[in-house]
Image (cartoon, rainbow, N blue to C red; front, side, top):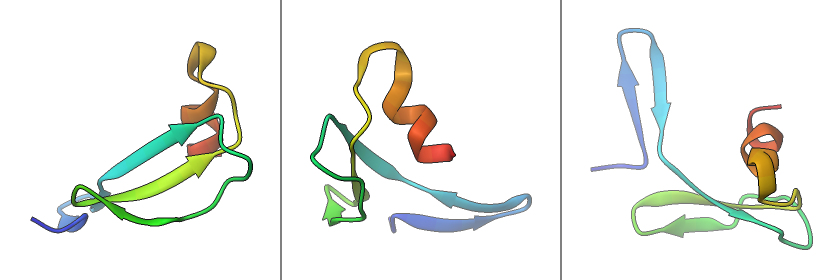
Length: 53
């Protein structure tokens, strides 16, 4: 399985978000998913919100 796939509604992207990183960036692949370190803190879903913003 690829880290991305086409669906009827658009695209599906499998990601591994690493909260609390020094900077937000795409860092390559991790376990078949796109690895994205996020500078936002993990409490309260801050890293998830930063990813979709």
